[in-house]
Amino acid sequence: MRGIARALAALCVAGAVMTGAAACGDDNDGGGSSTGGAAAAGFPVEIKHAFGTTTISKAPTKIIALSYEEDTLAALGITPIAYAENPYKEDGEFPWLKGKIDLADSTALDTSGDLNLEQIASLAPDLILATNFYGLEDYYERLSKIAPTVAYETEAGIATWQDVSKVIGKAVGREADTAAAIAATEKVISDTAAKLPGLKDKTFSYSFYYESGGLAVIDDPETVAIQLYGQLGMKLSPKVTASVVDRSLSMEKIGELDADFLMIGFATDELGAEMRANELYKKIPAVVDGRAQEVDAFTAGAVNNPTILNIPWQLEQLEPTLAKVAGATG
Image (tube, rainbow, N blue to C red; front, side, top):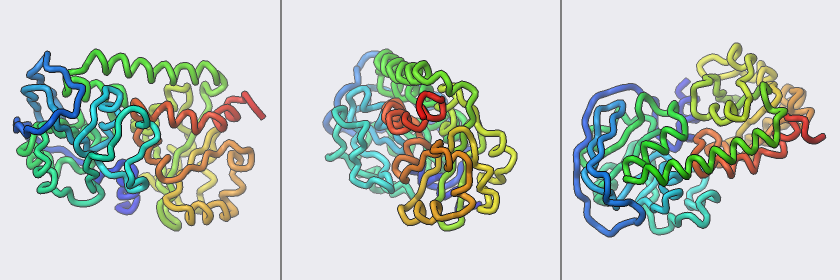
């Protein structure tokens, strides 16, 4: 179970598994130059979350993004001073950020293990965003002493990408601009659903092959990784919800991944080759019919963490297979 949790956490660019605690955010003016974008009006703001209430006294200019918040910030033209390093794309060149912001001068933080709090403090942030950070209960109190820290409302991996973006927009004083950006992404989704009406009521499954014999499967329809497909009219395969135990599926039961649309990510190219050679995998109807979407670890991470900017990119990658599922081609 621990290996599965770590595999999913790696996809979330985060640390461990989450529980609850109670604390309250403190203000700490970090100084330094502006990263651009935030308006001065509307402050102070208060944001309630799982650990209490964070007060942001003035427009932040030195923002740290611990769990993909850089995507919403980029939609607003704001560059964070630091962001969570993606273990599957360490150069920080995310295709959906092209033409929006450049992270070349921002600090990439290793969030896969213990957070380096000294490093974070040395950056003198005036806002820390951790809206989807797994393991935050272990760090929230200490982070909030460095700068106002915004957490998730209930637990990591549950809030919709829209709600996460709204919280970020409020924290930086750009609620109206954020609403417009959300509407633009929602239009991309609705346009895709309208283009592929055959997706309605189709089933899907989503899994990640993280080590030899180790298959992590998303089986909770409430998780953020699942919600995008619901917006397209699809539903999680009942085979998955009936067969998966502790987010795991044995290789002997891999056929239970079958669905109208099967997505599977591979942690390495070698693991991808290993799975494709598996006789049980090759016999899955979705694989035989070309309704399986095999993705690398970087793309799987984006799928596991849909954001205001990576969703249009995701749909572009997935559309050929989704079209086949919808009956639009083939």
